[in-house]
Length: 236
Ligand SMILES: [Zn+2]
Image (cartoon, rainbow, N blue to C red; front, side, top):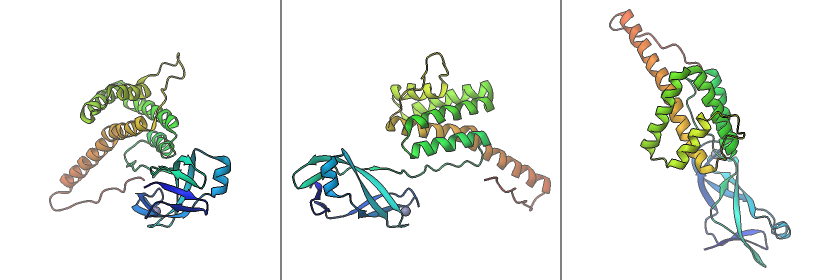
């Protein structure tokens, strides 16, 4: 059944006015109810290719903005596609605890760009994050990251074109041929995001957790059996 806006400014052709999605504000996977439609008269006059509808999150009541492609402008109806794009995407979760201050700053900004669907900005911040990492980890660390990237490719079965793209963003520093960061679409950015999270986890989070566990173990040995010192609070 098609979904359409009718002349009386109502949404027709669907029995359920709710959508289910991850709310960008409260991050709950919840249903959201339609609260606002664009005016038929204005759409008919300007005929945009996409229209925005506003929903309300049933969990936190915040507004959620969705964009629907227009399938057809008819005389008394404007047909919309059922698939929508979330204008504001949920923030990606990541444990920044063990990252250095500089890597955290760069990667936070990369995640903000990703959430705004600014994929080329996201790629640029991924390169910056990678460069900061390489500076901190040294040449041997850079080689380890490269090995890890190929390991992720094999484990996650990433196709060769996408792999080359991710590799170019992270490792290609040829400034003779600017712009040397390739154009990134949403799909490639999604894969790149998972790769970056995995690499940061391996290089910082895993190492930090291990070191913390070892410190705790040594403290317990120093204190003798039966005693346990509390861990020092983690920096946020
Ligand atoms: Zn919510």
